[in-house]
Length: 114
Image (cartoon, rainbow, N blue to C red; front, side):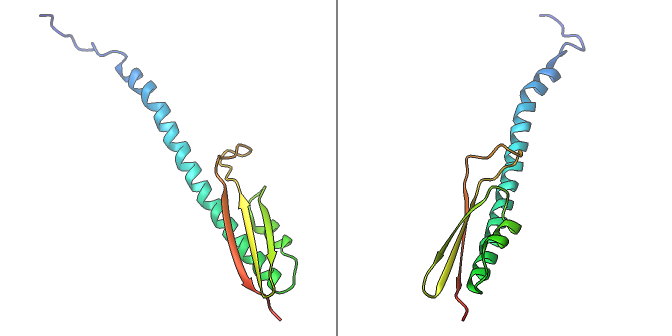
């Protein structure tokens, strides 16, 4: 039986680092993407609510949506006889121009004011 000398594990840290680093980066990307998706959802909810209230007062909803919604968001305004519903849709973009394959939608309804 051969005796094992100190330092015989040379290179094991490098191998573990090379295997663990991609997993750590993937975990970081998923975490950042999740936080970005939640932030996008909050912005869509706020924009839909403000736009619905503006439309209920007889004002155009577009300025409220453009001010609050995330970049690239789309919206739809459905006006009934006494209710106005605004739907805001956006794609989270944690890396700038790269969008996640996820669509975030928020909807708000407000009663038309006299």
